Image (cartoon, rainbow, N blue to C red):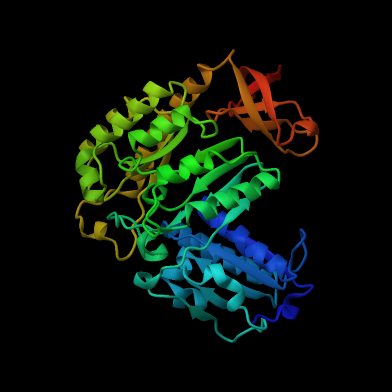
Length: 438
């Protein structure tokens, strides 16, 4: 039995690095602490507890995690410091050795954080509590609402793919998920709270069902029936798991938006083989074609990694040509980062940092052109926009069904409301289309 009197009148600060899944999990941790009597620190207030949820997707991410920990320790002297997340799972002893850290929790422990906080007594050396990655089995439910209107619902965790460049399976364990009925119950709770949009998050959400014998399509169909939720978005789904049935259902759906995020990683088949990806460019192109055939105005975001080991100049040019010919909307470009223990380190050809930067800039420029052209095609059209809260006096923003960012004059009454607008020209910085309420 946890003695919650320890937590009464305590103040906590939360710091999250990395993906939307991390933000959802931090939100759940915060909710558990709040239920025990802990409130979130106000701006400038000294905290009794610091929670850091880390990322380890690149060596830069590791560095940012260490910097965040040092900063919080300095800003909140004497606070009980807890570090969790992927960096904590991969390098627990290293993190525990950082000055000021009291507790390091692995992937299996973070969902039950209250069991490990004890009396919040500072320690001379941090304690690390982790589970070997092969033994991680727990699925911790998480649903968060950020500063905006949308909620992030965690439906799946872990990954069984072991791509050659990636440490995520070592940080989060094998693929596992919640039951459809439990996730539907969480969506209903969001609706009761007034939430109108939910983003489905996970590590490899198309692999949903490994631990329950269900399928991602079954989940999508069940969520589509939840009254009160106006919009769902699928955060990211592997191309080989994005079935024609899923695409077809989204095209007919009442609530799932014509918005897809599909990791490509490379537009060259030879590099995809080096990466140990489970598809080729022909399959990827066919998925894009199917989406556009059924939903011509669909937004398609694509992840791409540049400068991976083995990506020769010829391979990069091949990839660039393929991506340029794809009818996609936006690229999320990442420079390859070497991770200890990954199979990619066995590949001899290494791309120089300055060449990685050049390739990244090439694809970012291509992305800007594609996104601008996509927005421009919609100027003059009518659209439904879910408006988001903004600071007084500043323009409000929201997104159309197909994820076009729209700017309106400030009106508090529009917050979290679906508004019918006519899409005008680009705003001053080109980040959105101006809208006129109809």
